[in-house]
Structures are given as structure tokens and as C-alpha cells.
Image (cartoon, rainbow, N blue to C red; front, side):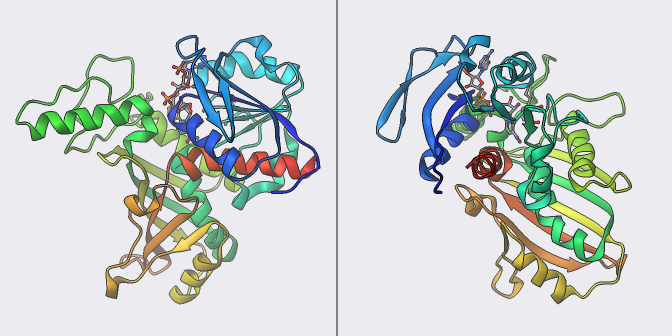
Length: 346
Ligand code: NAP
Ligand code: 3JM
């Protein structure tokens, strides 16, 4: 992208699964970077990361790290954001936060550019990036919402291990090898929670992502429910979710049932999806074409297929929504927001 102004950018969580993709996208998209500060915990401080033709030394993230920073992208967990975002704001940075720390704060815009880019200017120093599973779902449902209205969404997710961080990928691969070698899998990480009980992810499906809340839903499920209403700007939307971890490395898949407020024509609904920004319709049952997690890996788009009228409710659709959880689900949505900020401040 072209812009006169160049920005001092900080990436917090630069050595993580999301941070790595943010750095790659900043380079690939030619984001107008002046200085790039790469921050992590003390564990990784001192290691070097390549950015274009430069080698940048990782520094420990501290309250002082944000002096002179214009844009700070956070993906180092909620505790780090809660602690450091206020300092970054104090130093004059606009923060784009990938964690759940500020998403439901009424003062913080929760932005998916294809859905509610108009909210981007309402910030008080921090713009929140939604949860990965929410982002791809609302991006795909937006054209249907605008044309027909939506009353109800029932979603089940099939989420990749990379959503639980770089360590979870290694955990799944290690367990797979153990099982293929005829040994028992030694679960050590998933589900991510403070409880000592861990489950096998290799050759399995775990119906728990994040901790449980008191109502029987997990936090991941509650994120999808609450964030969807906030992003769509519609508290009357009825949403329910079941979030499941599966042994896929990259790409979250979702089975979505959506009840519309008006009668619809199926071919028109598909045409709306095909024309929507950031959406690619892959829907040809005759040729067995539909979105696959493996095809979504490395891509910026959200893929939609298996679009069909529900048999129990003629005003409802069933569909399959897939996207790379580390890209549109995290790093790309965040860099997209940064690109809009850069355009605004040009
Ligand atoms: P990850 O691969 O485990 O990486 C975690 C990163 O955070 C590493 O760079 C780590 O640095 C850094 N970090 C950990 N503790 C820190 C501390 N006290 N101070 C500074 N940096 C610290 O995890 P990930 O998958 O990249 O995810 C990171 C976070 O992004 C998640 O916790 C989540 O909040 C958010 N996330 C959001 C989405 C989304 O949908 N928007 C998706 C995935 C993740 P070291 O190398 O020093 O350990
Ligand atoms: C994705 O702070 C933490 O423990 C991070 C938990 C986490 C989150 C979150 O709640 O911010 C891990 C993976 C997310 C997310 O995007 O909601």
C-alpha cells in the first residue's frame, strides 16, 4: 500500500504463532513501517528475527517499550494486554489488541473491516480484534444479514491446534508420532486451562476450547456468542455455539445454521456470498468442491461452501465456513485494521 507517512510499529508477542504472521504480513503488504520494535517475554529477548532486509533483535516488553510508538499490535495473551496496553496508550500509540482483554469493553471498538469498519474511529487508544472463530463467521454472514436480516445462528466449530499457540502444534505432531509408533499419546497441553486434566488431541476431537464458565459453555463459546452480537451491532441476535478442537494444524472450519428474517432465493444468497468482500464461495457438490482447512492455510480469504436451504425451516440456511485462523482469524484482521489507520492518518 502507498502512504506518505511512515509509522513506528511495535509487535508484542513477536515470537508467537500470531506475531510471526503479523511480521510477515507487515513486510509482504509493504506496510509503511519506519521503526519496527519486536517484543516478547524475557525468555526470547535477544533472539533475532528477519524483517525485509533487516535483522531485528527481540526485546522484553516493558511499560517503557512504547516510547515513540504509533501503532502497537498485541498478541501475547490477555494478561500482557491488560498490563501493557494502558502504557502504550499513555505513550500515544494506537493499540490493536488480539486478545479477549478489551473486546467486550463498551468503550472499545471490536472490528472486522468487512463488517463494521465504520467503528474504527470511535477508539480511546485500543481497537480489539475479535476471536478467530467469530471473525470468519461474521465476515461470511454479513451479506446475508444486510439483505435478509438474521434472527438466529447455531454454530459448531472444528478448530485447528495452531489457535492454541505454537506449542500446541508441536503437541499434536508429537502425539501423532507416539500413536503411529504404537505408543500411548502423552497429553500435556490441551485443553488449555489451569486444571491438570489433559486430553489426547492426535486422532481425536476435544469439545473444550478455553476454560468452562459457570453456565456450562466455555469461554471460547461465550466469545463467539457475545462478540457476534457486538460486531453485528444487534443484541437481539440469538446465537449458540459449540467449539471443538480437532487435529488440524491451520484453518478453522465451522458448520453454521442461520435463520433469516425474510424469505430468500438460494441462488441469490449464493451470489451475495460470492460477491462479498473477503469471501470466496467454493460450492460445487457435483465436483465435490467445498472449502477445506488445508486449502485455506496461508490464504487471507474466508471460504464458504455447502450452502443449502434447511429442510426443517425454509427460512434457514446451512453452510460451511473455513479460514486460516492465524491470518483472517488473527494477524490479517489486525494488519487490515492497521492499514485502515494508516490510510486515515495519511
Ligand atoms: P504463542 O505462540 O504461545 O505465543 C505467545 C507470545 O506471547 C510469544 O511471543 C511470547 O513470547 C509472548 N509472551 C508470553 N508471555 C509474555 C509476557 N509476559 N510478556 C511479553 N510477551 C509474552 O501464542 P499465539 O498463538 O501467538 O497467541 C498469542 C495471543 O494472541 C493469545 O494468547 C491470544 O490472546 C491471542 N490470539 C488471538 C487470536 C484471535 O483470534 N484474535 C488467535 C490466537 C491468539 P516468548 O517467546 O518470550 O515466550
Ligand atoms: C485465543 O490470555 C490468555 O490466556 C490467552 C487466551 C487466548 C485467547 C484470548 O482469550 O485472548 C488464547 C487463544 C484467544 C482469543 O483470541 O480469544
